[in-house]
Image (cartoon, rainbow, N blue to C red; front, side, top):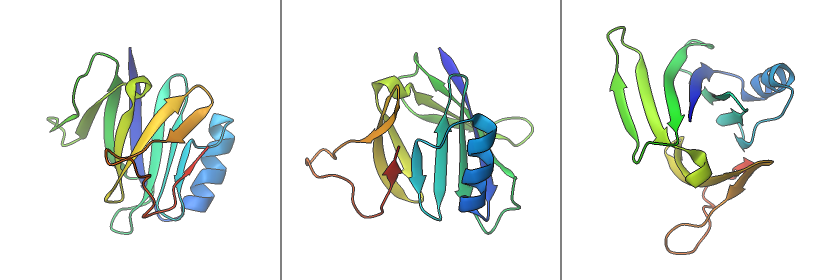
Length: 130
């Protein structure tokens, strides 16, 4: 199964969380305060990242969460759109958020922290998994 991923830029994470939580009728499953938020619904993954070099609402990339994918891949299409393909989150999803690698294991009710290979949790930034 493939789930579409849409990533846009914003300059206001808090307002974006409020707006898109209302639109999707649920809160984000991952929040890095003032930096990033991710919603996972039955049909789409949607993320916003604070990016002062981009216009708010500007497309950052499109992608797929794909149960058949084995590795992360990226390419730019004929129109200059960056596409990413990631293995399905049901098998664990390694995300690079604002230069920080965070492991997220998606469960039906949201996301949970996962430890690094050395057994320690990722603690450099405070990511809130809901």
